[in-house]
Image (cartoon, rainbow, N blue to C red; front, side, top):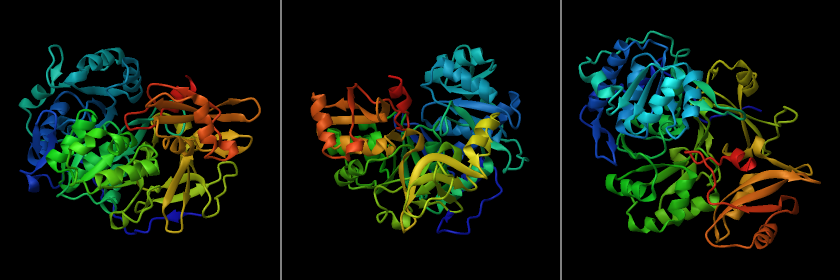
Length: 516
């Protein structure tokens, strides 16, 4: 059965992504587009578009051609947006890089993406320059200054604001090349066309309706496609103001919300954990933040409810993946409060879905859980130079998400768990997220993650890695969980650790725990 959005008539402009996002920049010339909460630096919309055009001219003069890949490695700051749009307005492709990657990991991405130029923030210039040299990338521009490499300021100082005319087909030309492990395996370049990401912005415009009066806090990293599309560019597209933070800290985030009057929150589960439990929350006025969306990782319902009650802000989940630009589901503005807290909302406009039995390949009956398959204009063109991985991810034009989901009678979706992370004990399927939600209700547990471990008779059994607030006897904890779940779901082993490994977006890195 094919499920469709309740909203019809989506129009996707045949447009270059940066032209689409900054189309209204000159009409709001003097309005603040970006503010750096750490340094106080501000950029108006006029300064943003002129800076991007000068950057495009400078990059073109430096030899960047349409279709070339330019990697951008920076923390969140206003200059990230300038560099991003400069690359796009030069007709090139942006490959965002996580600054916390090791030099070896950066080299791997630079080589795989065939990067032509690296733009790197001053704070990471040493690592970036070393990686560029090892990867054979000749041109490096530093957002700031560096004694041995080109400065972005010097690049654009005398460049006239004359961007390259974009003549390629937006449905085929790439805009972004982020990297993702997909449903399994090693990191791969995700080919997102201009049409893919323009479509996603238009889908969000009809659902999670950011407008020019909104103020958003960007602490989720821009190198992650969730923040890149749903936060940064969705905001710039409608004329909102974006407050950037270089890294997450509970006081820094709360201070930004209070000082700048943030109206909509873009969160990840670790931030919601702080909103629910951190003592510092009581010191700040967060009343301007009316609604918030959580993405990038599953959100525990009880945790969200505790944060909502404490902050006075409705929190709901969205859903997507890098391969879908990224958004496919959200809680719509018009029924945000009515969306069940455990739901990721409804399909975005022009998005279709199926729920498929992963063993038989047949659609499951309504109400039952199946692997979520997606089809829509925001779905990627494929993985860069990896036809095998692309073929494994698509079936008859449907993107296989690797997530198990169900749908209710109102068309709202619920993510059950990752297909590859399901623990199979004596034929029973156990969702780690379900056990994690139980464990997090224990008053002495700060955080937890559950993985499968070999079991002599069951094949696999759940093992919990636990971060505690105070000492707990492991057997007492095993017994406590056993009282709250079916017998086959019992946790069979406990390991205490100092912190749960997570990605910058808040996803639990279970592979690290499996190899521990």
